[in-house]
Length: 144
Image (cartoon, rainbow, N blue to C red; front, side):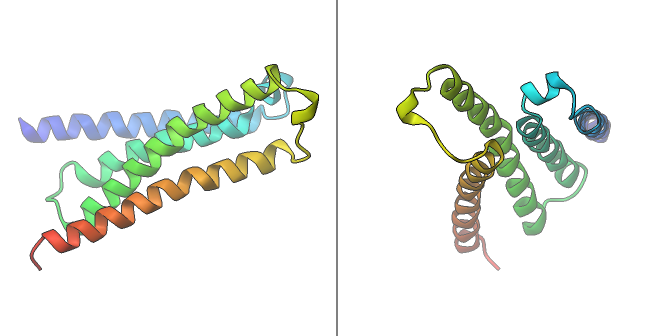
């Protein structure tokens, strides 16, 4: 029974990853259209990358005996996945807030791509710090 559940979870994760890759291809294919440009295909790509990492974390863990390496990779994928998944939504919200509530005194000279890159860099430093802290804590707690 447990192996059937594991296979079901793996199948769902694989199908979800294929759907995510398909959506990523569609974003790339239609990137020049007006609706895709208006909806910020870069933040959608970051969102899909986070969803892909979340699904990939199941592939690493389900059906295998847990080891230190698999646990570390799963925690890293989960942390980056959740951060990119939710962070892209926050970036999009802040961008929309800036559009609708911008004042002439609040203008920036940076492009949208440069701002997105900076925000993603800030977002990804959070999981790196969490993973470093987690791995240091786990290496001190578990016997060798």
